[in-house]
Image (cartoon, helix red, strand yellow):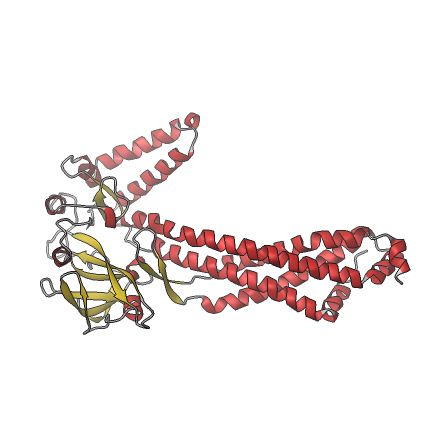
Amino acid sequence: MAVPLRYNARNLIVRWRSTLATVLGIALVVAVYVMVMALERGLRNTYVTTGDENNLLVLRRGSTSETSSQVTHNDHRRIKYLDGIARNDRGEPMASAEIIILIYLDRVDQSGGANVLLRGMGPMGLELRPKIKLVEGRMVRPGMHECVVSKKIAARFANCRVGDTFRAGKFFWKVVGIFDASKTAFDSEIWVDADEAREAFNRDFYGSVLIRPVDDAIGSLLAQRESWSKKLKELKEADRDATAAKLAEVEQAIGRTLVGRIEADRQLQVRVLSERSYYEEQTRTGMPIWIMGWFLSTIMSIGAAFSAMNTMYAAIGRRTREIGTLRVLGFKRREIYACFMLESILIAVVGGIVGCLLSLPLNGIATGTFSWTTFSEVAFEFRITPELLGKGMVFALVMGVVGALLPARLAARKPVLDALRAV
């Protein structure tokens, strides 16, 4: 027979001081774990939701980001007028030559400053990003040294409201509009005319060209190429033949498209990938945060487990007579073991619930962190999901079980005679 659950609950209430201390220790660990992982999730979600699956990004071959890529003015013109690029209602090719530049801005609260991404783009840049909407003011006019700023940048940095001006490069830039980037990576950017940006910072090249192809299937083919390439790298030499054959089929299909013509042009020396895939690659920015979260959580969880262990050892020391009485009444060692394990698990469950509740107010709060890819500040929101809360509860249960293993074993193996002497 099992020890009644009511017995465990009453013991926890009687020892409420030590129980509360252990609950708070576990709650703190769970809260820290959920908060840091929510930060990493929010950052990753920002990049994953960025980009249009129908857009293609052209970068210099060998470069890993727009900031390290160089595309010449002639390359841009050669790409822009290729057959296979979609045109808008006015008959203009949907292609935008763009450049990313780091600028330094002071924060609104005067706590210092940070690097911010200044994106120079062509007239077609906004049209290629239909999810982004101007919420205040208007779009920039070329030749006027104007800029539009994301809502989150406007809220975090000084001189970024409509009508304000700030110095960057050779020019003073006037803010003429605010845009809402719908929680994407563009929330961390300021937009200006691409040729003005090149002039202001003495650049004779662009960083990338964003294009919209006529054939919507190209994005799917590029995603397949990326997937098969990753699988091929992960497989052993003996298992590569089938995957290599699949990759070759996809490469042949891509070779017959606009992408194939661009990448085969030796004068261009560029590579093409879908805009969505490019931003998914940038999720490695969140890796240091993920590592830090696990490191902090592991160190703190060890302390919380020792706290739970100390609580259970103290409980056993004070309840020697109770343990002896339970054994005399016919309860077996495994039932005594389960009894003390259950108490620790109950403490862990309560601690996990409290920790999850403590972390919930952070959900949706906007913040920023350093990007190891662009070396600038990235704006994003904490993202706490049911899955993350579930992992927090599992984390709490693990601490409870680990903390009770040795004390419960001690209670179960305590000799009956020793326990009876304490009666």
